[in-house]
Image 1 (cartoon, helix red, strand yellow):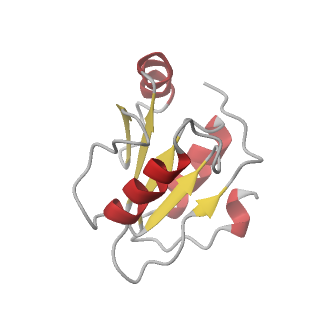
Image 2 (tube, helix red, strand yellow):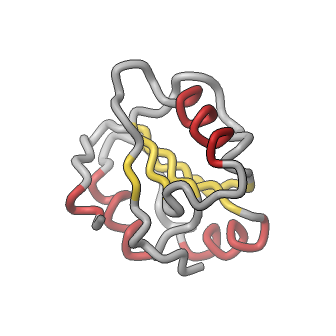
Length: 118
């Protein structure tokens, strides 16, 4: 799935599990004029992503694991999973996604075709 296929609203609060390609993040940030994008990944990848996206004011990159998402309940309106079920504990990840996804927001978007690039 490509980002253009994901219907983002300008005020969406989007969580991305894993660090996707830079083009994906830049395109999403441009489409989220009044929203925000939070990307979580391992420490090394997050360091590289922070350097890559430092000029994007609506993008936050933070270390974390998808089976313990470091955010409060019901915050995000969209969740994009770059590994789409390929995590070591997919049931725990699914539970965490449900926890941080705002009620009425729908299902997470699986973007397995997006390769982690950073």
